[in-house]
Length: 350
Image (cartoon, rainbow, N blue to C red; front, top):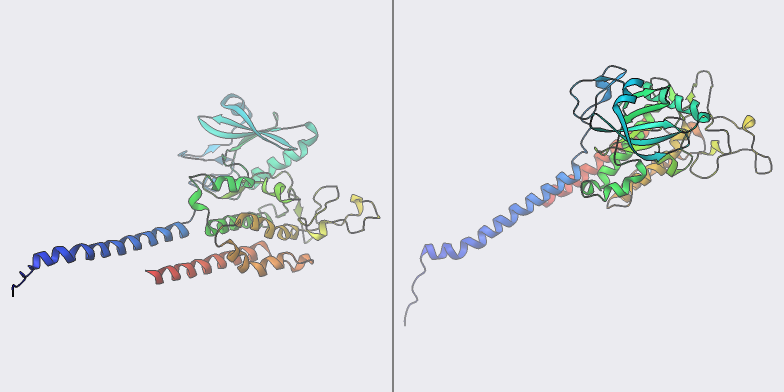
């Protein structure tokens, strides 16, 4: 009987080596992909390169400017700023994409003399509230009724879905980044309620589209307040409260205390309309946050974990609603908890 020649160890290695190598390569690739997924889930949106608070009051620094510059004067605005095209218009001002020293900026001009008080109020708020929560002021000219601010090409917060469809930002369309946006929004409300001027109420927020139009989406995918023309002051110690406008408000978006309380049979009259405090802003937070969370994978899970705090925001009794800081703390806890859960589940797969 003829014996088959024995295979050499070298031949055996050639036959067994490639499958083993392929297995190791597959494991390595799987781990790499999982870690890439983790990076995508948990990377925080880049923070602004500069913060106007790092400059003395009355100065600004944006983009890659190395030093702080004083707010531009009337003379500088007239000589150095070149309007390019109109990009927005509201009741108080028109906004023009403009150019200053080869940088894109936003130039706002008063629409009509009748709105000058609101325009000047908005300017005063911009000057007093400069921080990471508010659009950067670059200059102003009261004589010409113009205000110059940093330009944000993504526009108002109402453009969120369109921005997330851009290839540059598509990787940020996750529940994590959306929840961080909601935290940014609540952070602005919290800042206004504890501002250097006192407790301010965001009055230009009678429906969701109007509310979203008051904020800008930055290229770093954060939120800044932009329209500060209607920020009345609440003073609890003197029991001085506010009314958002002088007309009747309707709908579920505004807080119950903002609705006419005397029934349809009695015509609205501003003199007998009760005033209210900053808790009207709290009532609206769940609606704005729901918009920001959108309908991506995981967003309903976030809504479930925020149900209790959002239910408290909708209390019919203003005093029973949480503060903006309470809501911000809850959002942070939910973000941390859910990230830890997802991270733990992913590690178990490795």
